Image 1 (cartoon, rainbow, N blue to C red):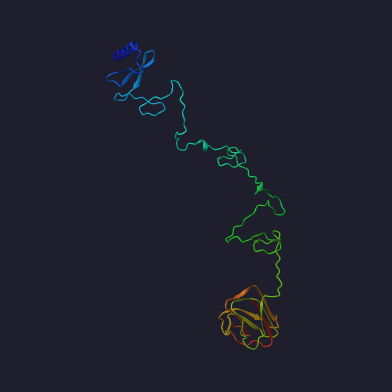
Image 2 (cartoon, rainbow, N blue to C red; image 1 turned 45 degrees about the vertical axis):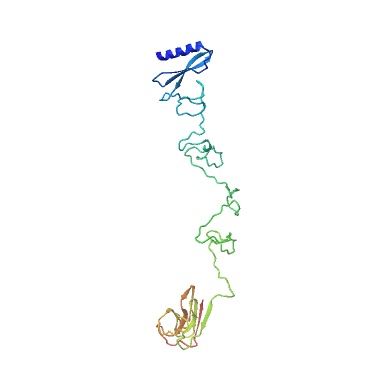
Length: 315
């Protein structure tokens, strides 16, 4: 400090001796120190000391206003007590921080918003009451009456693909797209009526048994028997047997492929046999018959001639 005082004294004396010294031109270095003392001319040759921080070699390091410098520790270009403006435009944010552009917007009541996470207008834990008033912008129909635009559609799941052009059926009219029966009130029994036809229907086989086993083929190939009628005006009981056999049948002497046997009563009792089979009696290979007067399923005793008639309805 004494050495510095002497140096400053020399500076001040030099400043008083001559005014030719320019401003900031006096420099005093304290040997063995990194502190460099220089003067500043305040005017009229009056000098005041300035302090500059030097590096470890003793070289003076001065910062430039507005330019970053790793050796400058003070804020450059701001007077004492002056507030520094700080810009956070490029300041990195921690992970998960919300930006202004990502702040959730306040929703409008009744309007859907991606930023609204809670249900608006309902207190916490209060159940929401559902009140569906429109379907596709149309007021929902209530009560009974004709179906209109406000009636919700009901889709019935099926394994098959949706039928093209599926439309509701009309009461009393058949429709391939209608699964339920139209035009009948719930719980009302359905009347079933056989439709009269002028074509199609059953095929008919007719036979007046002779004095033989009367083997015959009614139909070659698969078929079904729906009705059998047999009359007998004799006092002898006869028997009608049906076989699952086709063309070439001549097996009355065997029970092979026998499907059924019926009795043709004598005229002294009932005198006829009549039976219907609504679902049909199936025959896979063909429909063949025998008519004999013996009971055994392999009997070939001749039937009573000119006394009976047999009618079979089949498909």
